[in-house]
Length: 381
Image (cartoon, rainbow, N blue to C red; front, side):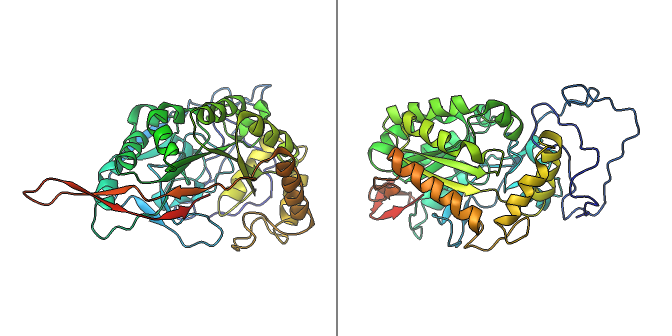
């Protein structure tokens, strides 16, 4: 990956309306090196937008995946199995830790990640095949951890809907994390599962400031709409947690207590937080975004990030990557603890999903299908 001569660009690229990344930064596996050149003909409006930039339309590519369940053994992640129906995410969150995965496709983790979406059209078929194997042993599945399973393309493709139908039919517990109100579409399936202890939801709310959210997560639901989603899910009997993530110093961090209070008022019963993570190409992409949107505080933001990362932009150590380290990280943890205690969040036992009604559908040749029930309880989130 080409290195930056300066931590922040001398003349930051103008942001594109409706997109998070301000550049199409070269992926670390690309062979040809790119360099942005300003020939003097580009005109930037008073709002900071490039007047003559071509509209960047979202392209969706069908992908026939070879497998659909991903397993991890990371000690700082509360689930072992995850399912992501899409690669790339149109929400365009500048901080997304999944951006570098587009490098494996020979694409940019920048604008390509949020405009070139790969849809795993055979996700349902693969999931059925996996769950119905005699050797399969059920574990709770985390849905949409890397890229949002309810991002805009799902409205028409309905891959997540099909996955949910399969899990519902088999009584297989799962949890979903999202920034989208589209999850409300599937309440008819999710509410009955929640009543049986087979489903829980988590909604990410980074800030209540709509202006910041518009540049930070441009195609996700607005903060106020996400709060309404929490209330709607809660009223349907679905347990909802809130993820206040990522915590960005001097940008979203001042909003933490207000976010938690609003979510508690909307019905959330649990909460978690993660400090800003900048692995691989996310670091230069985020710095470009800072230079374009918050030039007055860019140095302060990155200085504080490094305070929590042992002087580096990022530390991948399992014991540090989610919460950071040092005085400022400790202060954040204390603020979070005080706020959740005051609001009554995280007071009840949560995150236990009931596996006892899982049914593996066997279809022997010449015989009627039958359901096989496995019993277990597992903790998720």
